[in-house]
Amino acid sequence: MRLSLRWLKLCLRCRKRSSRTPDLWSYGRLLLKSLYFNVLTSSDTALDCVFEPIFWLVDSMSRWFGVVFVSLVILLTGSVVTVVYLCMLPVIFSSYPLHWILWHLCYGHWNLLMILFHYYKATTTCPGFPPQEKSDIPAVTICKKCIVPKPARTHHCSVCSRCILKMDHHCPWLNNCVGHFNQRYFFSFCLFMSMGCIYCSISVKDMFLHTHSAIQSSYQTPAPAFAPQQSLLYLWVLTR
Image (cartoon, rainbow, N blue to C red; front, side):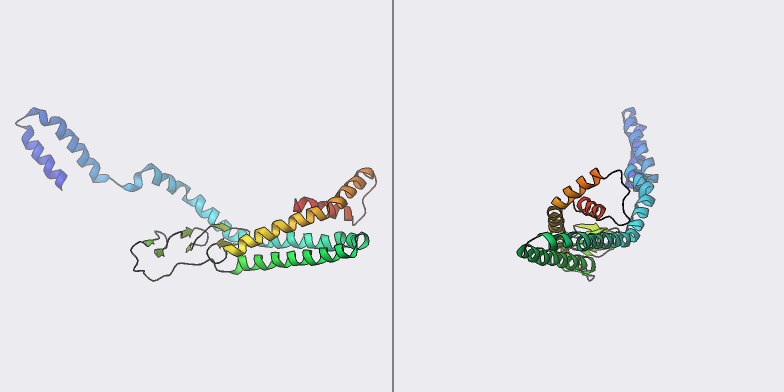
């Protein structure tokens, strides 16, 4: 409305002085643009609209693939434990002294229990959600997607469709967000899993080298139905 009044005043003055013609033209263009201006016509917004179906597809697939990744973690961990029990422990029992056998049994089972416990807690513990009621603290912002109070270090997870307290990331291997209440379990799981991989790699190093040389020497002979050598190779590659 103000632009229209300003433009009319310039039209009246333009009759007296011709120097007002550029101003009249500029205000006319500005008035015309203000009639059909829309923030949704910007290039950034248009690009977001184009990629919105792709983002939605990735988020939807992440929800479903989370179950697949959790099952894959359980399957791979179980396969490593099976190979250790069937191939590595018999060699340890037959060739190691008693104190080393006890050390392998105690440390290996303790490490396995720590891995299973922290993985279970990381996947089942709620990462933490902000309170739904309105806060009296003026510094607290509002999430634009779920319209709830958003404390500091809180981020909106597009996969879970909720705000997460102290969100680190959404981990597909946990099928859960890593947040305020389960991040200690996640980092402990990563630590104990790394320790387990190092333990298995060091423990089967000599057996791996012996198995590799045996396979190379008998390469032309047909392999038996169950080959412990292949299991040791699988264990070595997986834990590396």
